[in-house]
Length: 76
Image (cartoon, rainbow, N blue to C red; front, side, top):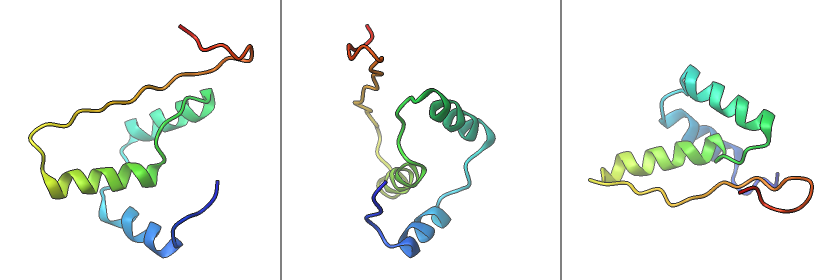
């Protein structure tokens, strides 16, 4: 992966948010093993910090993860 931020900024952001709990670490491990796309831990921490700062009344996630099998056709 191409690094686009200074490692010092990454370290700072990672230090601002709480450590990942065991459930989150297990989910990341399973996603990586199966090739399931998830946000990078640094991105997750940044999203966490932004929502804590803004304190929105509602958060709507609009995302879709799809896996493309070797045939090249998306799964239903």
